[in-house]
Picture 1 (spheres, rainbow, N blue to C red):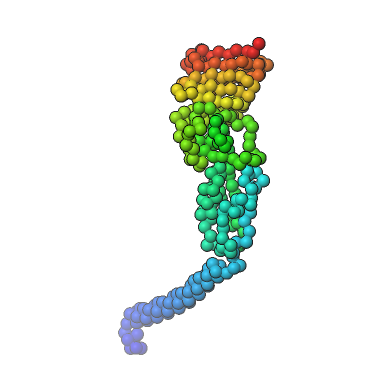
Picture 2: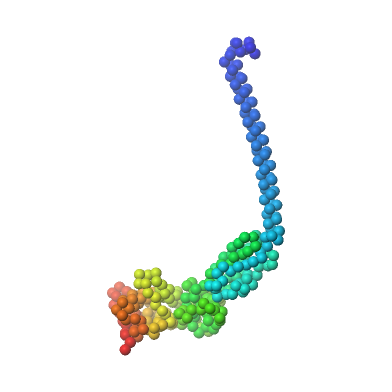
Length: 290
């Protein structure tokens, strides 16, 4: 070795350095394999722990549902007890295995006047139920029991003793009769439904630049689609057949101007917009009461 080193000192140093490098690489690889083995063992233990924890959570009575609360019960037309009964959550149901979606659908099916149900977990033993009821935009005339439609034209009914029943809901005449087949939770199949609903939306909206609400008592739609309103002040509004939503906007504008001049709706006998021309602005007629 010494002879070889003396003959070729540079080559010998390179060989030694190479041997040393190979040794270090092997030692590094052994460390990596050792670390990987330890991490694999740890991972296996973690997985086993998680599985055991899940099995415990899904089988232990510690996670049974013992309480169901209705978050907004004071603002609903349905009693909390009825809601809990219709949810029909089985006794000692596991809070993690119980499908909240199934419970929500069960409640929506039982009460078509419910628009949306969300159910959340609270802790490990309680479910919180949040309910959004449909807001009636109109009541269908000549239908018993009282039947309403919401802003989407969906049909629903309230209980007779409904504390939220609103006396200011317009009565809609002509869209349905006693012979009409009405299925709660379904959209009303009526030819001029959209027209009537859009008129009511506009009349009760304060989001436009006019900012006043028109209190409609009845909205009548004949078999040709002609629309006539009776306001709660007694004023009759003739909208006619075409461009009823645009005409309704002009009626709101006219009532706003007249009110600014001290002429309130109860001083008007009628407003006739049937001949109103949207392009020229002509043909708008109103008559004051004597």
